[in-house]
Length: 434
Image 1 (cartoon, rainbow, N blue to C red):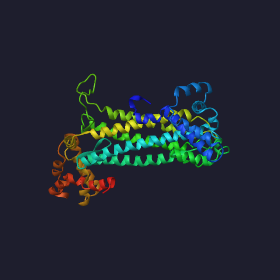
Image 2: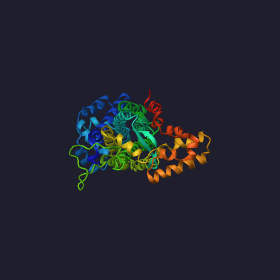
Image 3: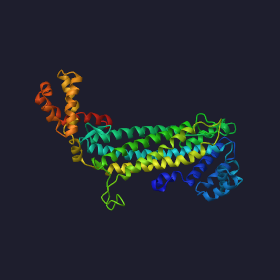
Image 4: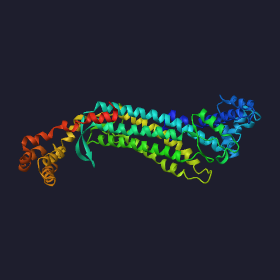
């Protein structure tokens, strides 16, 4: 985690103090279940809850771990210091370390997912607002970076909205998949602990029992979770790249908000750089780089090894903290983004009328001209627009073959801009509903 790209609410989920509090709750709930089953005395289970308001001493746990070389044992030793060694005698009864570690990790990932879902709602709200605002603001669509046909700025925001809405559904599914816990003991056979304990702990921690675990919860669940975060990051970059393109000096159809006192360059005072969206492109790469390690964690030896452990200690906080920051930054960029409709029209008219070439092509084929001949007739006039910046409509009106097929009024009728926006309402209903 880099503090520069971190928000406290998400960072707090991964703090050692939070982790130890979750470990404590897992152990305490397990004691309650064991007492109900008559495995341990009720008074011992009750005694564990004496520590429910304790702020566990992270430095003390680290001190114990320096000797034990085992983090869970270090925590249990520290817990006994608070509740008494005799009272804590039955804590962790029949459990293995992974029962605590894996269940805790999934609690943290569920909490992180909840924050990320809230973040996505912010992005969706911002995209919807700008889509409605610029529903009919015409701009040129580009394919291969080259002018294609007219579209609208509203449609640009709407397609990003639809993409992020799919990401929200993906994250909800990933959260559901990761929300399992395991209190199944060594190698996952429940030999030394009753499955009822697992059911009780999972209910209390907001999870579902893992249907079948080894000594660890299967890591295909985690792989899917981090893959989903990677897809969301890619969508962030998709939006960021579009905004960066729009802010280029020779395009300038949109731009990041430039605040009072902001400086764009240490050398060139005139600069207004798209630094936030460039930053988002970089942050997306950081999130995506956690995906492959998560995939590689799926293959573990037999019933348990710890090759995944060091990886998850890093990618858990890194991916969620970075994505949380990026989504909030993206929402702010979209909310404050400057839009320049006049520049959009100026850009479209750099090659006057050229974006109507397909309309003319189709009209010629409808008028009885073969597609091959129609394409040739349109292209020869279009190329003159490319080369000499002349008006496409005027070129067509001077082409006797085109005039013979369509007539002058027929040619002029193909340059109505409203033709390209007639189904915008239909698309908006598909994206946003009626």
